[in-house]
Length: 88
Length: 88
Image (cartoon, rainbow over all chains, first blue to last red; front, side, top):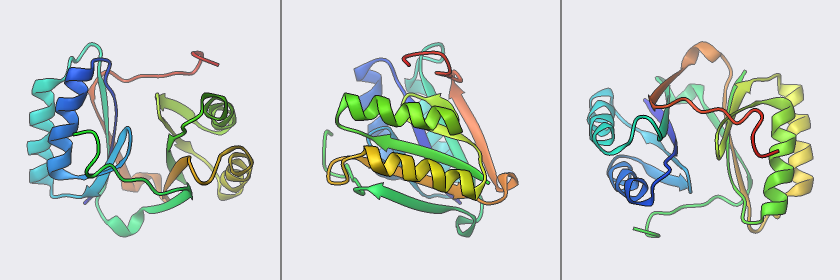
């Protein structure tokens, strides 16, 4: 399935940890956005890892799931970014 | 259709302008993320407004479109945020 993960994380240490996890599973497409094709099993694994890092009263992670990647269309205005080798 | 709009905008003045436009069309669900149900016509109108604001060599706007909202599922880890009355 195709997923988009967006996040608001108030603490830089937790933020970096979450990004490190997400980087192993998905593509870092914008500063606060990861995306990619992933199996349900891998996504559950990824979420379990993130669950241990975040502060559930402060941080916010949204996971948008589209079973069939054909059902989602992405348009880009401006530049297409990538953070593959940046920051971490 | 259901859309998710994420953005990286390097300049605060442009960022605020873009948010002001997006607020009129969609729901501000995370710091760098808007979402909601919108018609193709309204989305085109919204994009035309944003197109005039952004610097196409620096800024980045992603528009993820799912025609049938039933095809997208959202899960929240941590808290569900909202910026309806904040910042602007």
